[in-house]
Image (cartoon, rainbow, N blue to C red; front, side):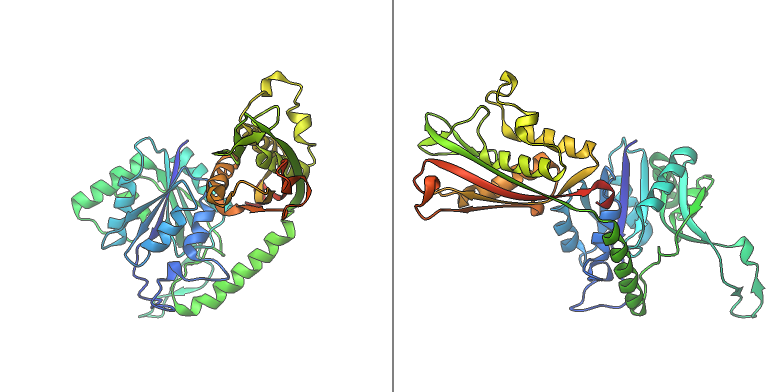
Length: 389
């Protein structure tokens, strides 16, 4: 199934008012993260995340796009209904399931998203809702209203993509204005299927809500830290210089008078990283997995081996946390190449470049590195359980 998520962040937030330097509520920082960031994390497993923005939220969404390869940014309309329609139209035609979610509900959990998706796959829709818990009265007459017949709709509201796209087209054709996506779906004859929402899935609406959200996020972070089992590994590798070979570090072919000696492409930086990651997972070292006695690895690109190491981590239930590597080389100067190295390594490990650090230093003419006989790399890496991502 190909899934997409529409994150609606184009509203004016008039009931909240502006916060700090005229920020929109979806881009304000709460307990260290913005609602937009929190929603992107919650829906990160979707094949496409379409963030629907206004002029006030576009810049924050574009920054987020640099971190997530599956994010698209689309300008919203004058109303929520127009914004949803624009978001639906920007998705791929082969999309199967689409979540429609208000960015202001930034405490949504992956479990609720999964429930909504499963319902949409089975029934065509999966709409988060809670039964009314409180006594409800008519404001004018004071008469009580039977709460047993009431539910409170939340988001995500998740649908078969083609059905909800057609429903929105019909709504615009008839000039029908709806307060949520379920109403549009019902207009086109769809039968809503509800899934149990969550009390914590509140909507950030008024300025007075901010302390509550800060507290809830703080408590959630504390709970996550209790189950967050990060593991650390260390890797170190040295390769000697040899004339007539290419110098490859971090997958970058660096112009130099000598290259490094090795059975593969001798990418000592990547080798150190692989050892650190395998060590963190207690899976031995690269010699165990890719022995230099095996002709299959002769001259092989070390980045392809790093991809295999990433596969080993996945099988063990881990993902890369972060990597900090230091290259010790008297020459050549490596600073011009470190950014590309970071990009290559991040791509191989399917992680953000921001999780990869590559530094270069000299040994001030001392030791074999200082005498330009070799390059040494030392690396520290962390891995985390994939359930914690």
